[in-house]
Image 1 (cartoon, one colour):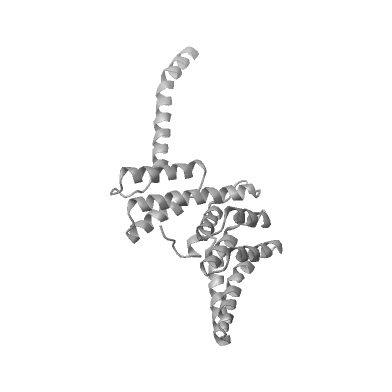
Image 2 (tube, helix red, strand yellow):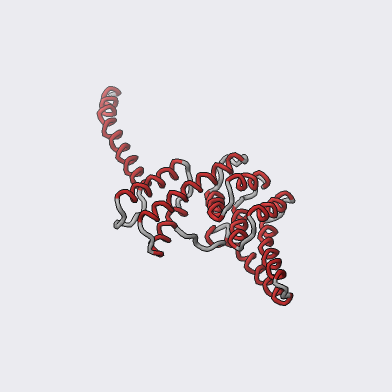
Length: 231
């Protein structure tokens, strides 16, 4: 009787192995699929798919790359431009992740990596991303700090000054709300330079309201903090 079950098991093994291989192959193909417009050339498609494959291998968030494709279509960019934008985004994501790992964060979260990529797109370096990561408590997400950095960059704040301000907050173990409040200070300072004290008060209050919105939204979506970038 035991021999009978052994023979059946051995006979079924190749079929089970084949089924497992088919399932694994289907899973791999599903993971490898990328939403690339059918009108794109084979060369552009290959570059985009290669960038997505590299992102998967390194556990990088793919949404920023998909966003570049959507932006390109919306803005009428050609396929070569979109492919180049996707490749550059993947490279920044990789650099962002590597900077955080060098800073001691073994497994950076996808939103942290995406926030770092956005800051780098605006002009921050991987060394500055690494420095911020080193100043932040290990249990504190970098998403808000990096998103605020991106916003300050977009408003014209020198990157080195913005990094220093955020580092100071991180060293003081400030909350995410306190870091977001830097946007309020930046808006007030910019208005004060214009010499209009009434406008300063108005802009400061408006910035505080926007800052609160950013603090609430940034944990759910990095793109809620800054506008869409160019492809």
